[in-house]
Image (tube, rainbow, N blue to C red):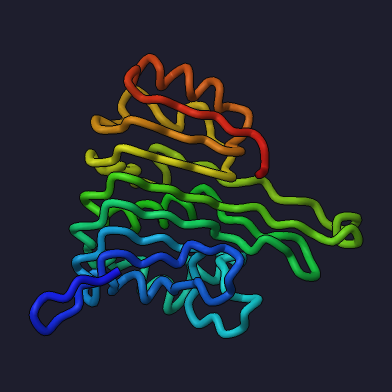
Length: 230
């Protein structure tokens, strides 16, 4: 959706949230400069994120996070701040990994990968109110399942790799899906002053402990646990 103001068109909603479409992908380099080309953006929904220099449709997702987070150009992109989207209120990523692993075991992000990407996103979204982030799960053929094991899902650490994970104080709605969260993902030191709802879908065996802790530290937050895949 765009609003006409004088001679310029202001982009307020960019919805690429259809996971099924191979065309609804956007690269990290595009995201890093989106604040320059669309500073008025208020809603950004991504079906997935494309890794740098991806050319084939089957390589569009961040299935190989080592390609994303190490080496040039990814290192160059993530080592510099994302251009701020000061008006952004809603952000979502539908998945980081492809839904199917072709000819081998799936490759998942590590907790360090996730934290680095989250910090990069959140630093560029100072006013975000709704944040939805899905790692995703990949599946193998029956033949490959006999040869390979599924990797463990990553977590989200409040402090990891020498850097605190800073949730914006404006955040009202948080949704996380397909992670293996540790019991201390949200601690008494986690600042979520505006949070109203949190949804944890397929986030591992510590969710009940997380919910109990949140009820003590953030009693006004409504937390929903979802275990089903669909």
